Length: 206
Image 1: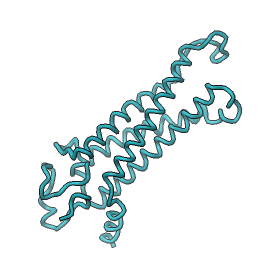
Image 2: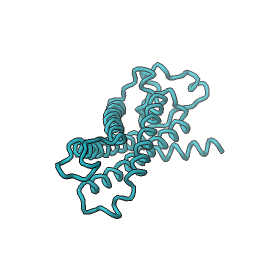
Image 3: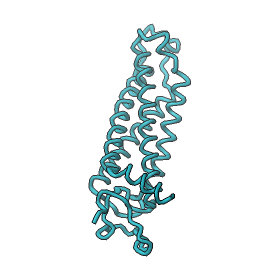
Image 4: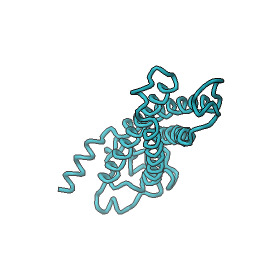
């Protein structure tokens, strides 16, 4: 039954590398939009116009906005990094394995969840009583992209875990489409040949 489950999962992720590139690209786009919205919010609160009643007219900044700025910057960098690895099929060591990717994804997932949860607890009901103000509309859009980014990131995590479990490739190159007979990866284990276990990926078909 376990073999049947693995085969089903493998079939589901047949086009895994292109799908991952698409998801990482979407994550990078959402991160960029959220970065812009966070930057606009930060500029507004640190340069309050005269007579603005917010915080009694005293300049300030929201800690969660600073956290979101940091999160979006590292997410964009991470997305570009992973897309390049997948596209170029880079496999230079342990830092380019699925294990390293999952560790990075786990850290980003926590940052996004914390940022989205804290922002929602502060501005979750703005759309009901101040949609006429630009500042409120910006915060509403900011919340939306917080959760959109987190959802896409969660999808990447789930799909990656399914692929790793189905193919037993935790320490294999994260580009996910190599031919074991030609791979330069130093982590490829000879035991796969012994037990006739081959990673299921687009590039692994004879």
